[in-house]
Image (cartoon, rainbow, N blue to C red; front, top):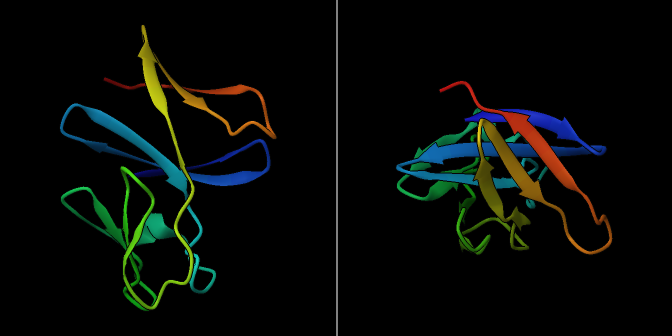
Length: 99
């Protein structure tokens, strides 16, 4: 997992199998960076209080999280990982891949 600050937001990226999953890097329960936590299959577990989120949907699957996690669609274009932003931020962020 890696963490980035993109367009003023903390974003985490996990490479799981063939997929790159991009997500808000801030736990919805209490402020903690999720990239400091652990991966379990396609879920991320917050190191602070063990709130667990599905990285494919953003759903909070185990408490004490309150809200679902923002997740962002990704695509590979050559050596770039492109992250699609929500409508209120219509842009694409680019992260160079080190393969």
